[in-house]
Image (tube, rainbow, N blue to C red; front, side, top):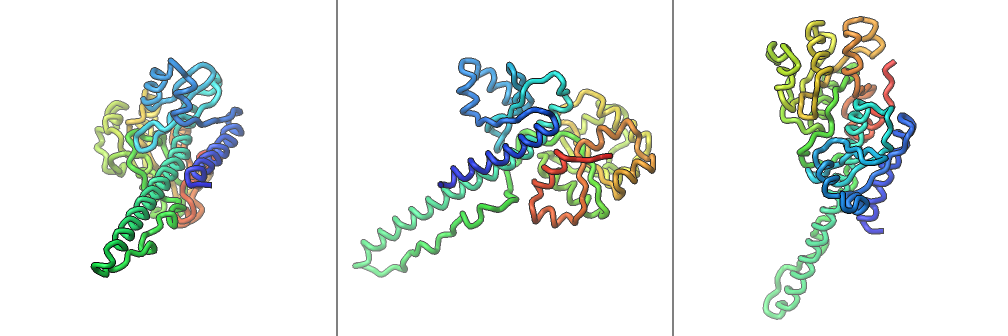
Length: 317
């Protein structure tokens, strides 16, 4: 089996696992198609359909809802689920974020592995050509032999679970996060990780916001695609929380601010304090991450798996 086939199988396994979780939570299966297959299936309507997908939002087409997936800013394909009236717009938006985070990370990793394989092959060919030329000239001079084992074999590093993807031109994460941990430092590290994966241009502590930013939903949205970090959610006043509720209930898009908050309490403890407005909870905890281990453990083992398991199997009771 060559590397491309291995990568394809890896992507298929990821999609299959995600499909199982989607079926369990939403009662429908999820499929993924690369862009070539989508273009072929939609025939003469593919140009319009392709244009709609490039906008980066879910697209309804017949009996299906398609969720575009990007790699390095290019449309790589789309996941799809049956078009059902009972699935709300908010659920579609959340599901799209999870799909992009999981599938895009896997596709980006596969893309990098294939590139490294091509580089390795090119280096080998150049080495062999230089070696052959050196053999022809051996009667005239005795150059230092070029040994194939001097070539770094990139495949030795292809299983790195934390590749450095190119910064996306569209943002896969556009919902709030609540990070639960007993360590303020770990909350900060995880918040920075989320910020990095969301493709936003700045990381701004909530305390550094101008008071005018909370005057209205429009003024908060005008901050643009940055991450607003709240180190301890209990430090927000009720007036500040009401301002966030106003922002969340207004018309928003993927290029608005993303809020990442932390709590040193468990969710049950936090609710018992009554320091968080009930109307803020549904928006604040869309992405709930309960860190029971130090950040370095998640980073070392597989951070993507932690995101995946938390976002698709969260428990906020």
